[in-house]
Image 1 (cartoon, rainbow, N blue to C red):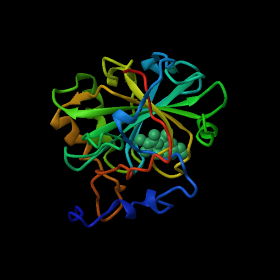
Image 2: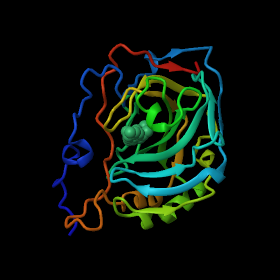
Image 3: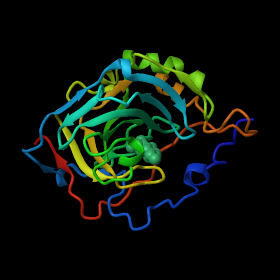
Image 4: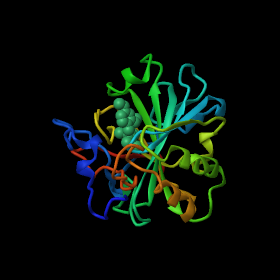
Length: 263
Ligand SMILES: COc1ccc(C[C@@]2(O)NC(=S)NC2=O)c(OC)c1
Ligand SMILES: [Zn+2]
């Protein structure tokens, strides 16, 4: 049976049995980006993503989102430049979304909510030898955040949307290859905000250099509706719960500066 509306809150989600706020955390994510409080940094370089679609390997439902995973055993899909001093390797991307188009993103811009947010996760391969190590270090990860808006159909996303029914339940995984993640970036990647933050689910480690794109991408209402057909629950569980509202509550800035690459 499907759960009743309101029967389930984020706090009961298994992912969230840990602390909802990282003890002693002073650089937690997500945040509201106050545009007029961000500081233009002329030294920020253009971002240079260089992705090889052949490193795309699988897609799986981890019970909180769905992850498209990339082979990160070599420097084939990388991210450099922007605020980054080192070379970072793409390891996965995933999304956060709401039960309605009125909300769903983790970050906001002057309190503006978006229906969904893409996270492209990279780890510092100059300093660490594997993702699991980098995720515990303060300069370990770089995550590109892209806001999604409802509009025209996103042709590149459709290949992903078509395979989602195959990973409907938690812990399901299917082979997924030759997907170019660059197709999910906005046309303008030179305008972004960047700040020091954290993972937005446990272990909430403060390892992330966030790079939030100013320009959003558009997906159709029907494409986003397929995201909501996924389930938090595995096939064996008696009560099935729709995978929606998989975003964290916003965290305080605690004196951090958000820099912008544009005026
Ligand atoms: C142990 O390593 C982890 C654990 C969780 C996540 C997922 C997340 O918390 N992080 C971002 S970004 N969004 C999220 O939902 C992760 O992603 C890099 C890495
Ligand atoms: Zn995320």
